[in-house]
Image (tube, rainbow, N blue to C red; front, side, top):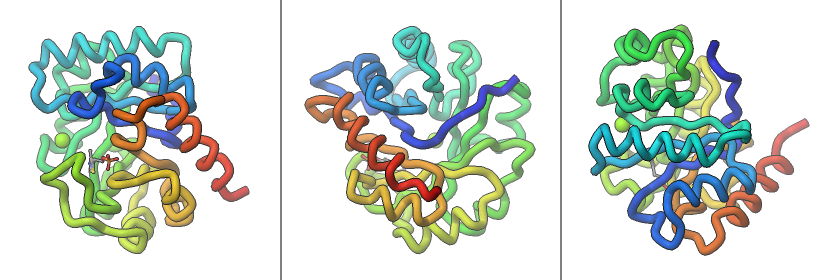
Length: 213
Ligand code: TZP
Ligand code: MG
């Protein structure tokens, strides 16, 4: 069975920004502050290293409801038995990813246009990451920023829940939620801050306060 998921505050770990606190420590602290999902994203690592890292993150989050996501690496996701895998438009197709992960692992897909949003097959894909909302130095090779207007249009065209990403800080949360995205995905707003727990808590409080109803 797939686990229920909550996209409210989605932390993407970055090995270059997590210096003062390790990635595992950042994950633990952020989840203590309210992060609901944690993605292991380590572009330079080998599959074996990603597996080891994902296992350590899983262990650190044991007993919490937060889910662990593996970026890109299907083999690592399956071996580490994480809750979800996240792929981009240039990675393997969602249908092939679904075939390889089986029915029980969640599948996330990055989406940057209305065209790509409309192509999302909800039988394969469980959630989408939409962005970048703003240009961000965290991902120098990012796609064209979409802004809040683009975010709203893309979210409306997606048949599955979405989480916004790219340059997002505390002060953007109201606009992100007003666009229809369910949650906020961040790297630098948590990784590399002096107190990742406090950073997550401040984001989480604003997400809860900003949610309609
Ligand atoms: N995908 C699109 S933008 C981005 C990723 C992984 C990086 C977002 O980082 P930050 O520091 O939250 O702007
Ligand atoms: Mg990718």
